[in-house]
Amino acid sequence: MRTSRDALLSGRLWLRQPARGEGYRVNADALLLAHFAARGREGRARARVAMDLGAGVGAVALALLHHGVAARALLVEADADLADLARENVRDNGFDDAAEVTLGDALEVATLHAGAIDLLVCNPPYAAPGRGRAPSPAIAGARVGDVERFVRASRVACRVGGRACFVYPAAELVTLVAALRAAGLEPKRVRAVHPRRDAPARVVLVDAAPGKPGGLAVEAPLYEHGDDEDAREARALLAGTELDAPPVTPRARAVGRARSRTQRAR
Image (tube, rainbow, N blue to C red; front, side):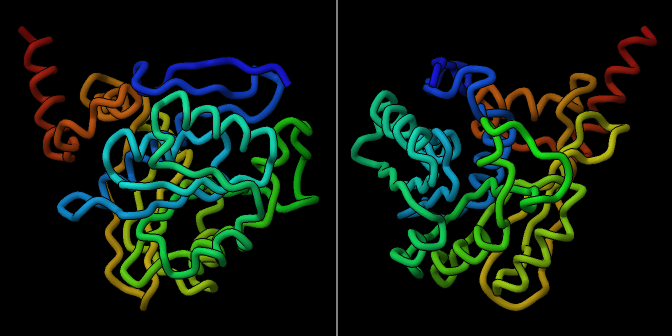
């Protein structure tokens, strides 16, 4: 398999990953998930142990370690080639003592760490086997699979008081929520990510916890593109600087747009 070495978070991290056309490559969703999980820990002690289920080459877990969200990370990946790349990325980014990569099935590995994980992150497959048009074999492993199995694994691994964060296609949100509730996880935070202000949500970010229904916070949407105020948070997030600044609130966006209109009028 041909690979490429690419910068993440404006060069704060470097990842070896499949070259274009060779397999699933890291995209913005990994950083969206890491950022969302990190925001959920604000005001709390950093997680002692985080777990990344379906870790791929390690982007989400390494971003969490880079931002100091977790003291230690366990990366679980079923594809041997991707697991090898994840180990290389852990080493090359200096996290040998803080991260461990395990090759294996998500549920089987989660069972070995039952009730021990403070923070779990997961970008699960979203296409059921045999449903819709089959993706190329190079990326089928990342897109096709049993989301319910990943969700069950998340519930098994989470300790009491732990959280499990997911990124999932917005059009399939009902499927994810149904799987969460069937496994005993209840959504507590949800944030929709839109390409632009006038476009439907592309993905949703969901933070779930073991427990009873209720207490759901629907956060302000995140816009990936648009004017300076709309897209400022997304640009900073992808650059790796957003966690150093307060999130952009709806009121701040409105004030920023008003200032822009005033300046143009002048």
